[in-house]
Image 1 (cartoon, rainbow, N blue to C red):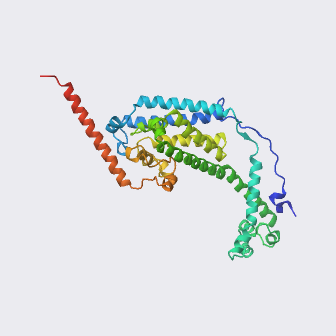
Image 2: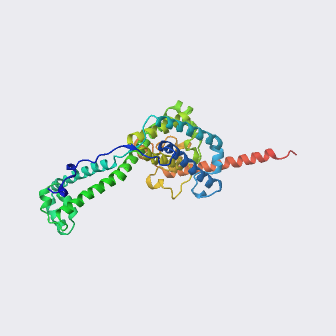
Image 3: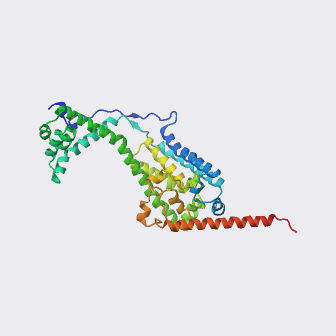
Length: 376
């Protein structure tokens, strides 16, 4: 048997030597960079939304009026800003401390892992004739048809791992050359799986894990009356959320709901520290846009999930407190019966809030005018 007809499992796995991954942005370590990324995204994005609000841009996309903010919020912008900064300091220090307990990312095993994936692809290819036969398809006959039309690689795929079948198929490029091309194809697909598909699946698993923790943890913060009154009600002092108010919580809630939840998501998904930067950055981006108070038509979150600014803002209203506990998807709210399905009713309640706030502001203005009028 020539080398071209060897199966990948017959070839020794490549040796490897692990070494630390160089820092992405020296002299800052990847750990410290991963802690900085969500904070930088938080304040840059919050600054953009604050600028839009300050100068009156995109008013037709705004969920609330200034009158609502003035009459309904139970904390000032300064109190919110101070609380957010305090939480970010606490969570950053916690991240640094936990990071010191583990090692950094290691590299050097990439080619070894790619060959492992290529072997898996080859093993899966070996089952193809049996699968086709189970549904009444003659894989050998089909392979002969593809080979006759010049599609030699497809013919080899259909032949599976049966050397007798594959060698009986006449190929335009020559048997050994085509089998070598097939090995190269398997390695290329394995590389795509290793570098792109696996990280994408890990990222999706991390977001789902974070959403699961957030849903049940967040719901508990509401169902336990003492916890809600002493801890979670601080965040709900923002009936009209500020964009940077996403992290305005009691420090205990910040650690329980955000820090622990993100750590669990990172751990169960198997992400590297560098891949974790994407996770933390996305979570920060999502939190700010959920609290921005604008339903923008170009919001990329809306392309991924219905759980966006409108979805979460509804939860901040007095009539929506028992709905929409998830922060990334709508799956758990739909499954657990906390999904608000009647959008027309929600829109009517939003309008009622606007009208009430406007009347209150006008009444205060009239009262202030009378108080300032000179006595006659």
